[in-house]
Image 1: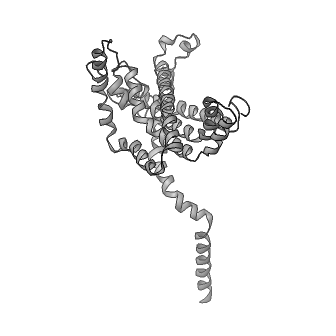
Image 2 (image 1 turned 180 degrees about the horizontal axis):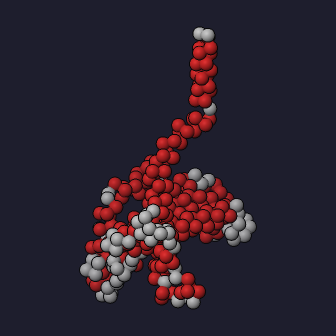
Image 3 (image 1 turned 30 degrees about the vertical axis):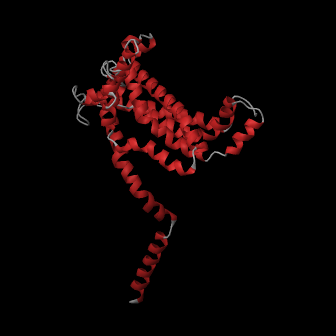
Length: 315
């Protein structure tokens, strides 16, 4: 009788020891905190947005409805191509267009910088140069955005310099120009850092071989540098696109009412309009559109890395 409980306890202990040594337990310990963090701070808020978007009023206390999504895209206006009656779609399309422009400009700025850092900069200077890219992160995002106001305003540095040269002033603030300039300044480090990692690992002998075979600088970039650094460019570009599509602070400060973006409309619905249901619907639409764009971009990136769409064969 006394041996059976001991055998039972031993069996339980053995099973616990076996389970603690299993891959399932080790994976749960390592991924558990991360999954809990993602669930609390990302999955639950997005789920709440989805819940609020399908109720006419208070969640679970009012009837279900799709009127908030119908308000975003009036089906009759879409079928008749009456874009004037679709202000939210036009604003979303404009915001995505600005995100694409900012991403392209950021990548265009990042390529020569990262090419020098990865291929030509002396090793003793690389850490310092990379630190110069990171230094803006040490300053508040809000302060860095405010700093552009005296630069872009009608009496700011740029227009004062143009006036000194006898050139007309340019409208750079409270429009989409100010929004784009501010977003490029804020997010270009996010393309430089991943692209530098790809460029630093690029074998310089491949570039030299291409030049020795008579390839022009443009063809070397198109068929050697670009395909091999595409993973870094894709990672940085996707991050910038996502951040710009939902940007609020920079468009609000530098774009004003003439440079509004989609996130400002969402903030208005949750703030002054106090229409949480419609704001939640707009948020869900933005999430779906950005995720869809992300999926398309990743698929295109995979195709490019496999060799399709690079413009032909070898050197």
